Length: 121
Image (cartoon, helix red, strand yellow):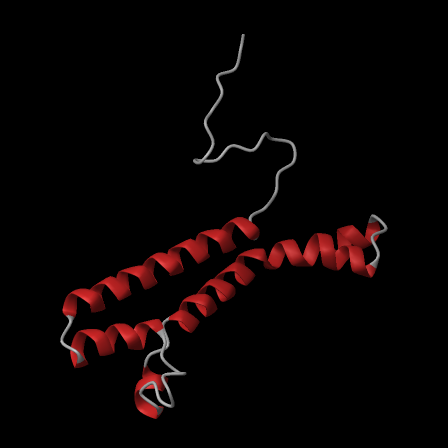
């Protein structure tokens, strides 16, 4: 692909922008998604090092769920915090997926959130 774009007269910047970056899109999406999920689910570092102290500045949603359920014995609230954390991760992943999606300008854009308009014949 790089050789073909060079033969077509693409500059170094154009090769990077139109060939290299689109080929890296799936890998970039995977790395960013796993990083996002990992950052919201940090538990072991907080549990081992500080347990939320000083002044609860290191409390993460995953540690808050654990502490609420197993230290305060409020299992329902702990499960609710975990479920909200799950929803946050899903929403952020969908936003990220949409932001990194390939754009096809030839087709009209239709998604599950748009009502399909019947075509006239």
